[in-house]
Image (cartoon, rainbow, N blue to C red; front, top):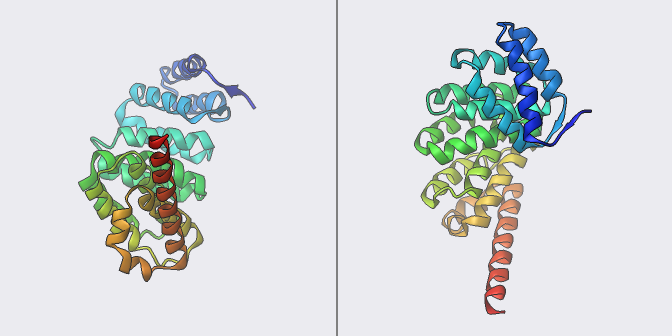
Length: 244
């Protein structure tokens, strides 16, 4: 497997792919992109750089068609590209980006697809367009695909970790609580991750919803407990460092 570790190489491979695209041959462009980047081993930050270049170069009206074809190839790196392009489209195509993200996640049917796309689309949407994102995520919480429901967790985790305001975290945690009794393993891992992150960064919110948490499934309560323990550990470490 080819390994790419430099931005200059990403740029060169993209330029070669774009040369085919400029010839108005989308099928050849996808083949070139697949062979040059999607089959290579590349760290996510470099793939995100490449995805931004793709977004800037491909005409807006053709972006989703290209994304659909990337999704069909089921590559790990392709999910990063899908997530970034949809993220970039949030400003002008918000609901559509959510719908497409859910489609790609359902099609991918793997935990890492929910994490990669969920963080980059749903997580960023929560940080940048919270009032629009919450109702869309509520809709997704009833989605027929357990993978799509699971993706709410990675998105929430990312937003909270990146500094989502506490009043917004409170509303988001209420959404997580609405799934507190799910029995699906994959949904539990995603939602539990976000619940743990909430407890780690916002223990006051956990205290506020103590009664609701008590009636949650054991998996939910366990994740909350672990998050509170991590919060206490970090707080103790900081206090110790300040006194040394």
